[in-house]
Length: 113
Image (cartoon, rainbow, N blue to C red; front, side):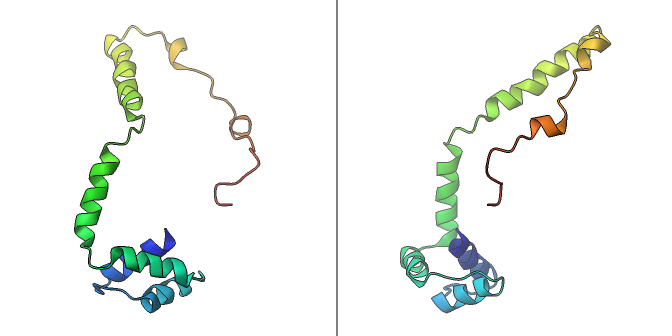
């Protein structure tokens, strides 16, 4: 992913066909070592392809992936119904939230490990 990100940064910077040296230079500027085999594979797969078309094709594929957003979209509609009625008791609205220490349990790994 980091190699692709560096490739896209080079393209955004005006280099239509970045080389392995360009990608290595971008990544080394932030202290990331490159794997020339993986960079070569990426360049081979992207050679002669239009990035705009690849991104558009990827967006179409990503749109078909279920993400569970339907339940989140229906929750605000359901919660706004009692508010519209105005008869909801104040006790029902004040749910006790768990303390942050209890809710954030250590599962043995960090987000950025």
